[in-house]
Image (cartoon, rainbow, N blue to C red; front, side, top):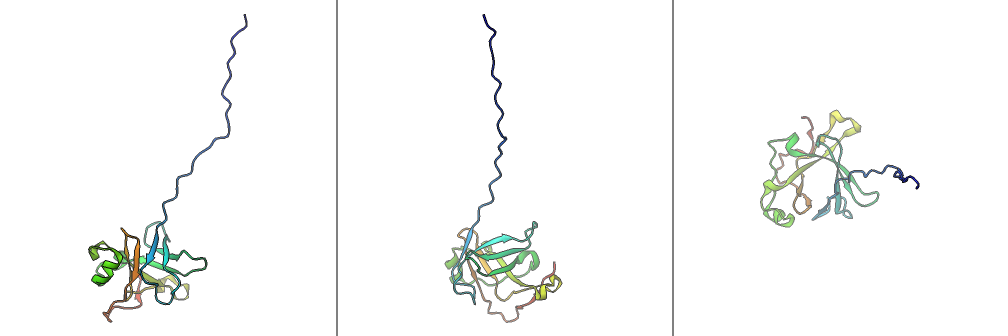
Length: 149
């Protein structure tokens, strides 16, 4: 009688699955950002790991890209007016549900000179992924407020 034989499993190449990237949510602007009439759909791309800087990037090839910051992180007392019509348009029950972003300018690429536009914040409704730049009627709000934490 012959001895029983066993076959060892053949090891193939190791396979691993990369973690899925976080889902990308497209923000649809109810009205285009002034000066960019052909662009209504944007994504928020993190600009740092701390969640303090974002790129508001058009989904269109060669579309505009804006540097943006969450207002509450840099200007905790800033409370822009979000009119009832805008809240309804974006699907916000209450203005406190909105994510408020300020667009940033960096003159000459010098981060020390960066300013935020407090006169026209971008209001985002997280639940509907709708957004709109809302020009404030309060002329005391600066177009160029120094960006410092």
